[in-house]
Length: 233
Length: 258
Image (cartoon, rainbow over all chains, first blue to last red; front, top):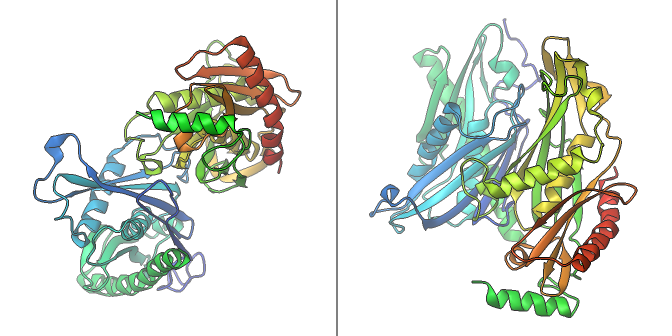
């Protein structure tokens, strides 16, 4: 076998250790913190609030606006220059698409719900960690939601199907396939699907099942984070 | 806009207290955590009450500036993330972020804490630059104290990465610390009416008249000033504020000790 044992000794369907908290940013209307292995994400929600410039407003419903950002010292190589990049703009956009379907913003015409995601430390899976943190933050903010969303990367490292690839696995010399997915918890519908790699239809079906199970575990951690905050209050 | 609030803050200060019950010269509890993000060469999280910032240092190799061929350098940048306050907006650093970064930079640079000649690798060819980014998580006031303190804590935590003369291997941190010769403390004293206070909460930052930022060295000498706010200060005010800064810097310096 080309990849008999995972670099960090995990089972193929095992995620890195996860921690989550709700209400970590006092100034925000809602906030979440999600850590998976060495990847760490904060998310803060502001709104619904007035949206400017006005041409961005939707008179029928509120707008969701997400911003994904890596802190300058968060990457494994050189310093990341502050400010938006092509990559961060795309990830902001897919984060928006991952979260929008669960929100009910019909009561907030012309308003915006802002979600800011900041990453102090990354090691693969940062867009998924950001989405997991944002889902906690939206619930914490009391935005009307149909469900929660959880996200995870899953795919292949050499000949093995695995969930939650680490940075070392993504750069495995025999190739790796990473599929970022997010699931709406109760309906199991996907709201995020992105892939780099090579996969057959049969493999994809199996990988999606693995990711779905992982997201069930994440959902429980997200819910516990929220319960912990609101019980404490 | 904040006339009522200003009146209240002034009246409380005259009774030797504040909105949150603190004494005027009492700072909130300071918490410092080191090595909070592994991909930085040094990092620290600093809290003043609910205010929370993260500072990270990336060590880079660059060509020395032409006017200082035998010296390395530092750069301080502040990111006031819209995540941390409804008042911060997306976009390039605004004047507040720039002032915070420059005040932090001067406090460290002018103190002589960093021996820039030791950051030179080959004169005129290669030198180290320590890039300090301080990012806000939650702004509940007092960033003028929290950001410089976080920058110092992260610099104290910094170890050089491995460098083979051509490329930096960020995966390997050496045992060699950046090593600061001094511990300058940057502290800001605020004036509202006739009262002075430190470590403002969000509300207090809206109503002060003037502020004075002072960087205090280990021997109580000072290495940088910055006056801010819309009102003027008398020489007596300034001497009084400096006295407060020197006195209070001891508490911050004690918090900075690991």
